[in-house]
Length: 385
Ligand SMILES: Cc1cc2nc3c(=O)[nH]c(=O)nc-3n(C[C@H](O)[C@H](O)[C@H](O)COP(=O)(O)OP(=O)(O)OC[C@H]3O[C@@H](n4cnc5c(N)ncnc54)[C@H](O)[C@@H]3O)c2cc1C
Image (cartoon, rainbow, N blue to C red):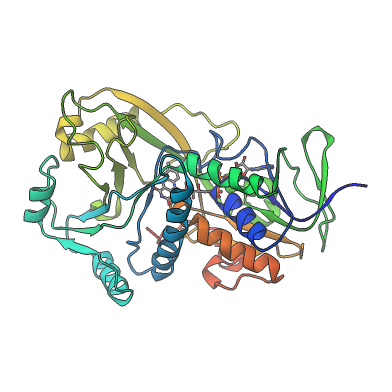
């Protein structure tokens, strides 16, 4: 007789791994499937570092989720060998006092967060290695920082396995059925059965559910760069700089100091062209390199001519406005869809997993309207940053 699971989670990125973990914590027998393995090199969750912050302008929902997730990341990090949470602090800075600043401060005041407003003189004094001439102010969150992303997800999956959870490398076929999903078919003729199914398939979700999610999740190609530091100079190494994001009037650049000897990280947050996550080209473009070098020359001049030591092409899996998707499938009543991390999802993995497990175990549709399928528009208009 074929084994029957309480729940199958398809996708072992940060969302699927935390969903499987939370389901297991609630006594479920869970099978976690991934086409390539946890946080593999094509997945959005496969990164040396991902930023965690609770600065979110007016979007208090993400501030709260980032905070609630941070405590779960901290606990995971305490169980890890080398830490997976590096509390470097995060600094977001602005050329003018944007509405986003006042909205953030209002949310943070309500939650009594220790966020600091830094004037230009203080920025110069604390981090003289950065050129601040055009900056009006910074918001500094001392309790946040970097998540060592790939290692974090892989460690979580190991914990899940050690606690009796099962995993397998299988590419799952698009599910079939009308009201109820009876089982899954996978690569190599494999088949799997469970009472409930969660699909946390990142940029692959529209391929698995073209009718429901085609045109509602937009995978875009994103380039990330790491530059060598100047010799004999550790000013761009952790902990001598925090994680940073330049709001740049809404056209954000962000990065990290050298964390594990891999170099200074920088990326431009604007959406790139569409990408197919299985076959899309993963070589960074000359334009992308020129763009970040021009930015470095402006803000971190000592790094502008340093060798590019690593580049990565990853994908965002964007919803129209940047809100996540955590909802039940509209017709398959034992299937839930979890995704649309939209370039800011990693930090929220623990809370997304907890919320998804809640919905699954209560057989419910989305409780949070912003995470419902119904609110996922087909025209892109990003508003969450
Ligand atoms: C360049 C870049 C920078 C980012 N920076 C940040 C940041 O600083 N802070 C932050 O919070 N977030 C950041 N993000 C966003 C964050 O990384 C993503 O939102 C998050 O990793 C999405 O996780 P996921 O689990 O939904 O998807 P993924 O990690 O892509 O996982 C989906 C998994 O589903 C599997 N899968 C798909 N189809 C199938 C199938 N048919 N069968 C079996 N398995 C399947 C895939 O193999 C994959 O492993 C960034 C993203 C990128 C690309």
